[in-house]
Length: 286
Image 1 (cartoon, rainbow, N blue to C red):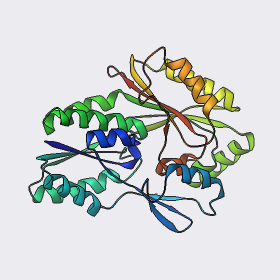
Image 2 (cartoon, rainbow, N blue to C red; image 1 turned 45 degrees about the vertical axis):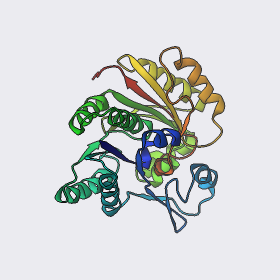
Image 3 (cartoon, rainbow, N blue to C red; image 1 turned 135 degrees about the vertical axis):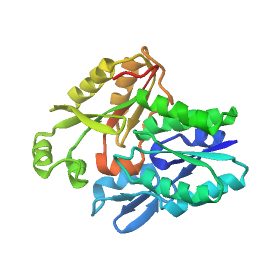
Image 4 (cartoon, rainbow, N blue to C red; image 1 turned 180 degrees about the vertical axis):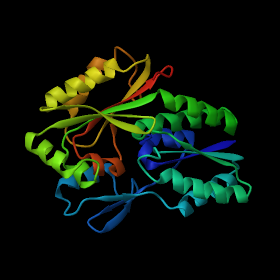
């Protein structure tokens, strides 16, 4: 039996985590001097409700290698003969590094662990984790699961719109000059994340145009979509989410059917009212 370990940036819905027996390690979020475990001592709803009023910019960090090592040992003690550990893109976070340190220690103890860099985050990572856990339940080998994930991650893209550049500036993701101009003009930034690389797609002046461009970008993405996921970073976005759903449901299923509220670990850097679509294609395209 193979056990699946991931981190909380994968945004896998709780009911799926329980049904598939996935081990989720909470990442660390520090707000106004108080350190929280993502989803344990700080809920997503609490975080986004308070985000505009925090006196200092939230800090985020990976779980320690010791936490990963504990998870691998617990999986082995529960009967797992192997562990696949799937995590947020290495280009974005140090989570894979922590996991690999722990995997090396686990190997010395006779516990085979394979660390997979998803090249993605939120439900881009989440779809990989769910696939791995479903394969594990069906008795797939560690090698077969890793091989499937390595191929599948090439078929995943995230297209997203940042409603404000303020938080990206504070996190160092964009320059102060660029963000200052963007905030003054209320510019919405559209980006793509694919195989660990983040690229800018467009900049628009209004939110309505931003949602329109997001839908256009999703439709223009090469390949035949197997499914979409809608993700967002807090705020009242019901009408925009409904619009995206209307446009995309005729093309491919929305999975999970409910929009996913993104982890604070990502939302702290992207800011509130962010909106995105995760695309899982049937086959790989450049």
